[in-house]
Length: 96
Image (cartoon, helix red, strand yellow):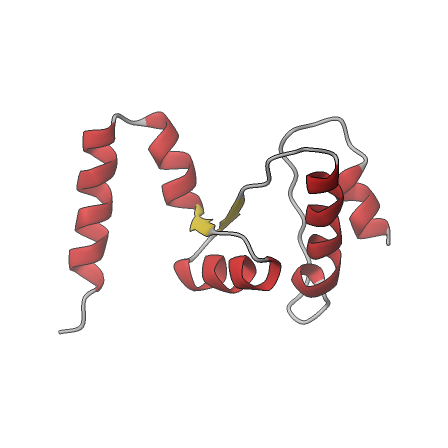
């Protein structure tokens, strides 16, 4: 409960929650926070360090998850830079 309070009762638009794997961060705490924020009319965006983590979190709480790189990078750079960056990531991660 303290984790949920920390995430929902602060006066900042950006919140970070850290915890060990398997402690219920996503399945219980973050899900409760997202539901509370949505009931109050907030738009909730999900970002995670890796694509796999973004998919897991997004699927768990029924929202589209993005990587931190994509989420933050797309706001800082022009569209052309974002397209080049993500295109390069796509090419470099393909199976060989």
